[in-house]
Image 1 (cartoon, rainbow, N blue to C red):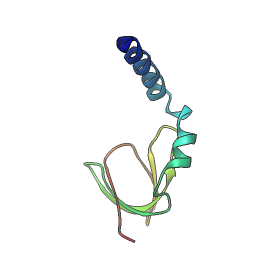
Image 2: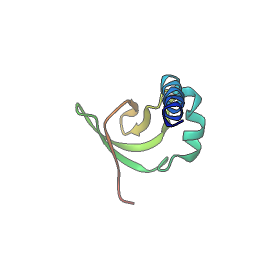
Image 3: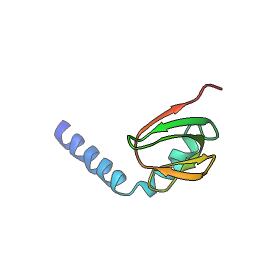
Image 4: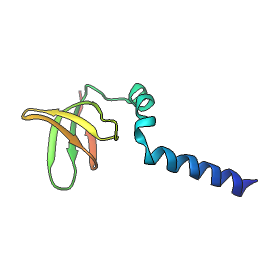
Length: 81
């Protein structure tokens, strides 16, 4: 029973990860911090801006002083209000 349960879980998880567009509507509804000031370090650049939301592929959408940027990975830190 446990191996079958784990196999089913991993199959479902893989499906969700392969098609993030299926989980993004729920993620957007539950995501905290949209509209908050953020600092992002993706290893190549440092960005300061406002978290505007999340793209269908899960990337963070950040409005900066120079325009809107999408970020696929990195460290996101909420700025103190």
